[in-house]
Every structure is written in structure tokens, then in C-alpha cells.
Image 1 (cartoon, rainbow, N blue to C red):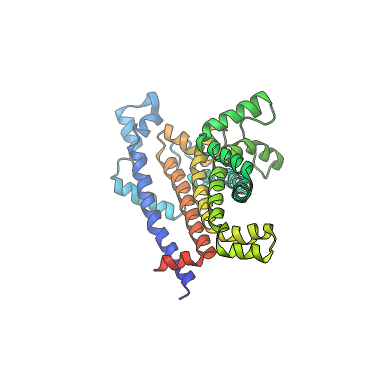
Image 2: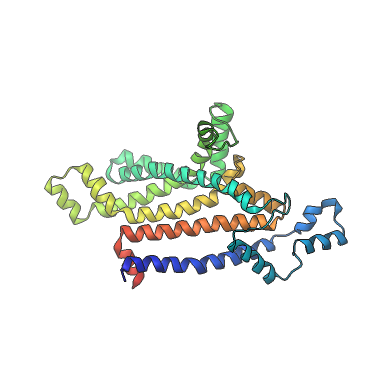
Amino acid sequence: MNPRLLFVLRRLGLTIPVLFVMSVVIFLIIRLVPGDPVRTMLGFRATPESIAQVRAQLHLDDPLWVQYRDWLAGVLHGDFGQDFVSKAPLSELLAQRVPVTLEITLLSMLLAVAVGVPLGVRAAVGGRWARRLTEGFVVFGISVPDFWLGIMLVLVCAGTMMWLPPSGYVPFTEDPGGNLTYMILPVLTLAVAEAAYIIRTTRGAMLGVIGRPFIVYLRAKGTRERSIVYRHALRNAATPIATVIGIQFGVLLGGAIVVETLFALPGVGRLIVTAINQRNYPVVQAGLLVVATLFILVSLITDLVVGFIDPQVSDRGES
């Protein structure tokens, strides 16, 4: 069998047990959160009789393994359950929220790559000032928390300068211009840190390639410097860069929870935060399952891309 095809099949096979273990962890961890969802739902109407009745209706008095079995069976059939509060099907709720989270994540990563890779290359092959400026940006991007940067952007761009709206959301299909206007601040908030990591990785990978004999040979041959840097050196440095981009894409999915709450974006992250406060088990389970699944899929895609970029990676995976 083709080694690359075998590499792909092995990665796909490993994904299934990881998804299963992740579902078990998600199901159990939400039940460790203090508080009773039934009491939260009933509020001042909570009595021993009403609590027992509602728990029976929601099957919360079943053994944990029975609850997990029923929940997993529903998920495998595309049924994530029902919101305890609004009684809305979670499949419909997630269909509305997931595109928002994916949009902010994709836009943030595109901006981070568009800024991070060129600046990382410039930091590796440029002069002293280019290196110092990029190092300063990296330190700033890695050190500053997302929530603090978001608050500062709101205060400056929305509060003081009044250039952009501080919060809100309009679907792209309804108003493309309005959608991008609302997305600028959240995307900047997430992209700065990711660009910093990409710059640092790109610079390190490029420095590891620039001194290789084939680069010296190309320069002695008279090949243009731009072609050496971008066509040959960057191409050979692509493996670690692609790896860190995939890892940081997964990190963005987690960071979106804070940013969605800060900018009032109707994404999965904000949905999870609201559901945790309400002890809304099905919503938290479904939201975390979607985010974790996306993270695993991104990691899988990253492994496959890296395997195709660098055949030695797939060969080592088979050995």
C-alpha cells in the first residue's frame, strides 16, 4: 500500500477513539460544575415535588451511563438534544451559532498568516531594525491577554475615535459590509497573538534553512535573492510553519469564547458561557463537543498537510 495513503488511514483511525474519549470527558466534566440545573430552571418555584418531576422529565434521575448512552446515540443520529431553557432543538441552535464562530476564527487566522509569515521571513533575512521591530511585536502579541487587548481596542476605536461599533453582529449574507465592520475589532483581538506565534516560528524555521549548503550554492550560482528566500528557503521551512498554524487555529477556537462574550457575538463560545451560568447541560455538552471536534479535525488536517509537505514525516509515522 502507498505509504502516504497508509499514513492518512492511520490518522483517520486514531481520530475515532480520540473523539470517543473526548465525548466521555465532556459529558462527565459538566456534571462536576456546582449547582442543580433543575433548581436553576425552577427558581422560586422549586419544591421537592416539582424538582423530582422535572428531573424525571429530563431523565436526570437516570444512572450516568444511561444518560451518556442516550446522549451519544442521539449525537450519532444528529440529535444533540433540547435546550432546557428555550426548549429549542440544539441542532438548529448550533446551526445558527457555528458559522459565527467559524467566521471569526477563519478571518483571524487568515490575517495572522498574512501578517505573520512575511514578517517572520523579513525578521530572518532583513536587517537589524527589521529584527528588532518584529521581536517587539512578538513580545507584545504573546504577552498581552486577548480580553485586555479587546477592551483597549473597544475603548480606543469605538469609544474615543468612534471609528467602529463596539459590539453586535450582522450575518454576511444580509449585509457584507456591516458584517465585516462588526468583525474588525474581534478579528484584530484574536489575530495579534496568533501572528506573533507565526512570526516567531517562521523566523526560526527560516534561520534553520538559510545556512544550508543548497542556499549557499544558489547564491553562488547567481540566483536572485528574492527567489532564494521565497521559492526555496520558505518552501523548505514550510513544515514547522504549517504545524504551528494548525495548532494555533485550534487555539483560536478556544479564544473565540472570550472574544464572543466581549463583543456580544452570537457564536458557540457565548452560547457555552450562558449555558454554564444556567447549568444547562445539553447546551454545554453540545457546544463543547462541536468546539472539541473542530479542534480535532483541524489537528487531523494539519497532520495530513504536514505529511504531504514533508514525506519524511509520513515515513516516520509508519516506522
